[in-house]
Amino acid sequence: MNYRYLGRTGLQVSELCLGTMQFGWSVDQNDSFDVLSTAYDAGINFIDTANIYSRWIDGNPGGVSERIIGNWLKTADVDRDQIVLATKVRGPMRDTGPNKEGLSRHHIMWQVEESLRRLQTDYIDLYQTHWFDENTPIDETLRAMDDLVRQGKVRHIGCSNYPAWRLTEATWAAEYAKVVRYETLQPHYSLVKRSEFERELQDVCETYGIGVIPYSPLGGGFLTGKYRKDAELPDSVRAQSMQRYMTDQNWALLDTMDEICAAHDKTLSQLALAWVMAQKTIVAPIIGPRTLAQLADNLGAADFVLSQPELAALAEKSAWR
Ligand SMILES: NC(=O)c1ccc[n+]([C@@H]2O[C@H](COP(=O)([O-])OP(=O)(O)OC[C@H]3O[C@@H](n4cnc5c(N)ncnc54)[C@H](OP(=O)(O)O)[C@@H]3O)[C@@H](O)[C@H]2O)c1
Image (cartoon, rainbow, N blue to C red):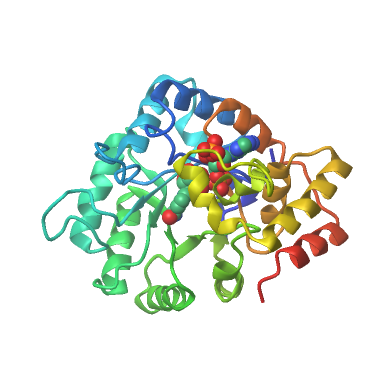
């Protein structure tokens, strides 16, 4: 496993980050433990979660993924100081009440204690705002985060799903107020989802040295090759949601990916991850394996280096401008 600096910080993380949204939802606690331990043994030191995972599922109270990670930290043979733990705040953590969600000082101070308790740790390495809160001034959010860093409860802060102007505004606001700034961005980014990040955010991140940890690098599974042009669509919610990617352009992209993979004896998933890892500003794509087999496959991306002609061919087939 190779390690990269997390943006301009002095912290090094594995070039694959383990996402855990699936824990306690489509993966039970025992299997989650296996995925966590196998990833750790393979050198992955970077784990991403969020307080709300997976509150959108009927009967799921949220906090479940954090709780599973906390239980694993307590029971597995691992060193907490060898792990870079990232979680998020913003989404609703109660059904009712005026402060059940958001990025106010009130909500952040409440939720950081809840996350620390569930994770069974006394610090969070990377505390991220899950998406922006248009009702809270950015300096209120940043000052609350700055206090948490000074208290030692949080080491670095990052954000997710911010448009370019909000990320720029936040970076300047932090500079002006002399408080901690967002060192990372977590955007949606893959070969089938390029424009949202590449249009403006990538330049903002490059300009300010913000490290990028993209989510859904396999397009939720489309880029694994499990969905094919002439194959019947499996009867699952996930498969239905993949229909958005089933375009002539993306089928042609898969053909090109097949050719490159054949030349390297690699899988499509590994190629999709290697492509993300080769893009400027990227620190580590966040993988979301549900099984040990998927994890083993994803890990094979770590040493996959693409040539310039291969990168150019993939860029052309996934062009969006
Ligand atoms: N910040 C945010 O708003 C946000 C949003 C979404 C996700 N995230 C983070 O990003 C992580 C990853 O997101 P994601 O799950 O959408 O990532 P993804 O890598 O695009 O998709 C992962 C899914 O692809 C399938 N898969 C993975 N490896 C495979 C393989 N080798 N062969 C066949 N299928 C394979 C599995 O789904 P099936 O087996 O069901 O096909 C797996 O759940 C999450 O866990 C979370 O930490 C953050």
